[in-house]
Length: 189
Image 1 (cartoon, rainbow, N blue to C red):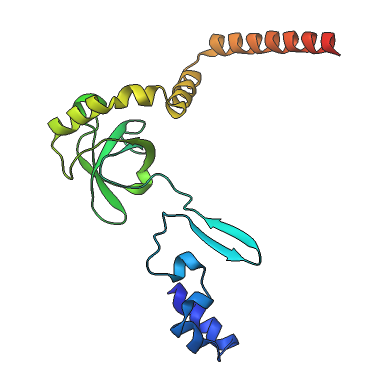
Image 2: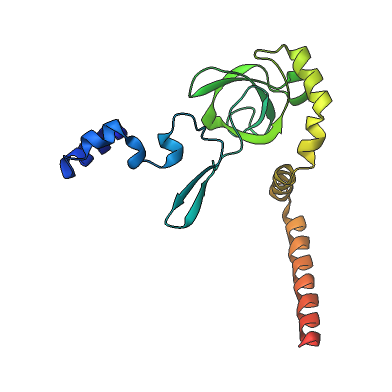
């Protein structure tokens, strides 16, 4: 629909150019969009007035079978799961495996999951036993625990579970740290 609106605007403002656009879109579009042989994941290069512009895709995580996801909403919030199948453009089928992560096989919307960098090699609609073996082979749990994302979530949950005395100890430690830094900076100056 957006292309039709753009074509209307183009025809309204430049009626003589609409036939040129329809016969030769490469004059109006960047080279990676105009040529049918180019693929959007491959960087396309275009020369224009002695400059070279590189076009690259900004995404590196894709919804695909075997992608490990973090459930960010609902009863399984904060748990890892694996995409088993893509249902449509809004939903996918995920499975924990339930023995490891506690997430059972279910259809979930994309807005309730966050894609991670981790993947496992599995076939579409893999059984729980196959999925469990793939997780063990790829060492997903240890890779996740060593990731910055997991460490940040662990620190956040630890801080949220502090009691009043623990928060007081953190405040005192922060004051001591800033006093030491101020003393060292005074010595250096």
